[in-house]
Every structure is written in structure tokens, then in C-alpha cells.
Image (cartoon, rainbow, N blue to C red; front, side, top):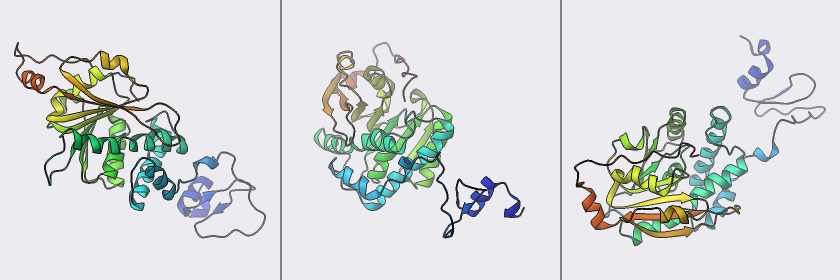
Length: 296
């Protein structure tokens, strides 16, 4: 069909241009300069949705003690843009404005990178020389924090485990478009994903600490580390943890442009408890309670 016979919206897509509100279906094609009376801007277009410059993200990352390359910033922002496009149709997350996704999603996840690097060094959970950190993002949702971690650390090998099909479809597409060869997506429940134990298991707004460690205990390496992202300091959840766990630290995170509270809880099994758990006294492993169905 000739472009002139197509509906206005279809013609705009074919020409690679932007629909302009005004008298008639006027189009601005790529590289074309319109002469005449300026067109009225469509009121449905939100000026706040303008692309975020990579230089701005790079400057904000420096506040988190991260020195990102321009290419890393471009890919991180491409991830946020992809999430925003999918979110309009598939409702992956309640946060959909570009600026809010920058603060509440991207910077929120980047804030844990430096603390995790230090924790892996301090607590002896880093693999030997030449071996990458292996991590699992439990209940990954829209890929937070797993995708930002993989983009900042291409030397880390990650697994995104998610039980919801539409979220897994997004994760697969994100890994494809961002060329994330260091990430694998698993459409499964944690208790049946069948993955090998990892040196780091992370979660974000996933479940209570007790349920988180119970669900992922078989997925944590003997010297591994749990890292749970929380809003307010989860003091009640910490008190509810079993005695065979050690809370290494509760870190108060300072996220640029975000006034809300953010914390990172670091845990690991107590060594003797981990050995005892390998062979239960009754010969049967107890099935842990499921995750909070309202996460994310």
C-alpha cells in the first residue's frame, strides 16, 4: 500500500517520523525541515520524558563511588527506556515516569554496587583469581537489581529467576537488546530452578528476610553471601531470623535525588549450622514458606 493511502499514525511509523498536532496529519520525517507556520505541540507528550543524558547518569554514579564509562551509561539508560516502553503495555512496575525510574530503579540499584564489592572482599566470599562472581537475583521482576549489576560488572555471571511469564519475556528481550552475555533468565520458582549454588544471592522488595533465606538457602554457596535490599531498616525482620544465621551488616544507603529510606542487609549462614543443615536429623528438608505475592 502506498504511504499516502495509509492512516496518519501508520504513515508516521513508516516514515520514521513524529506525529505533530495541528491542521491535518502533518508529519516531520527524519532529517526533514518544515517551512511555514509552526505546529502546535501535542499536549499528550510529556516534556519530562525527554532522554536522560549519559553525562548526567555518570555524574550521579560518581556520588555512589562508581566510575562508569560512557558506554555503560548509555546501556543503563537504554535498559530504563526499554522498561518504560514495555511497562506501558505489560505493567511490569508501578513506577513509569522516566525521572522516577532513574531514581527509584536505576540509582536505587546502583547504590548497592560498591557495598557489595566491599562485602565480597571483606567477608571472603570472592572467588579465586580468574573466577567471576556468580550471583542470583531472586524474584527478579523487571531485572532489578540483576540487570544493572550485570551492566556495571560484565565480569560477573548472573542468573535472573522469575516465576511470572510476562516478566521473563521482558528479561529475555532486555538481555538480547543489551547484549548481556553474562546473564541467564530462568522462568521458574526458586525452590525448583535447579541452579548450582552461587557466591551471591540478592533480592529487592522480594519477601521477609526469613522467607528470603529459607527459599534460597540451597542456592547459596558454602561461603556465600545474602544481600537483601529494603526500604526502612527491617529491625523486626532481623529479630525474626533463625539463630543459625549471621547478620553481617545493615547498611544505610544514600541514593542521589531520593529522600526515601534505603537499606542493604548482608547475611550469611553460621559455618557450623551450614554443615549441620547439609544432613537434616530427620533426613527430610523442611519446605519453606513461599514469597510475598505482592513483591514489586
